[in-house]
Length: 184
Image (cartoon, rainbow, N blue to C red; front, side):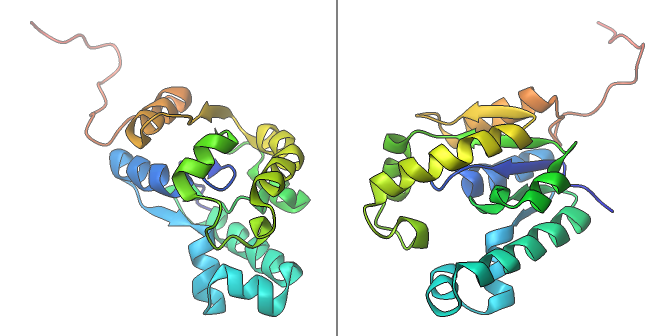
């Protein structure tokens, strides 16, 4: 089993994809998004999976995508916003470097708009987003080693905060041998 160096969780609009790709580049590792894996596996967009096959089918695909990615991806991994709703998924995340990218509704709206094709936010998106977060926030917090508020922060600042919170070493920063001081 090869565990990811960082696993990002959070609601729609938190910046998981943008920050994840930037963080992976900074750390010199690959980036993977389980929602993208599901689209490839199903051969259709997530919104179509929900409409044509139902949420239950989507969640089964999601559980498998998360399990596979956690077992095989050594880089930065972003999970779909609802992946943490599954007990088995939360159990798999135990002990891993999980970061909850927290975002308030106003910031999420600025980033993705709430008219984007997001099946769980289709009707009264602001109310749905608030209710979704009431259910999910405790679960995001439960699995997270670090919680980073994304707010008005640019993606690079969020990536820096993750590096600091998890005490990661960016790829461009070589490790110094222990016990050796630099010569002036």
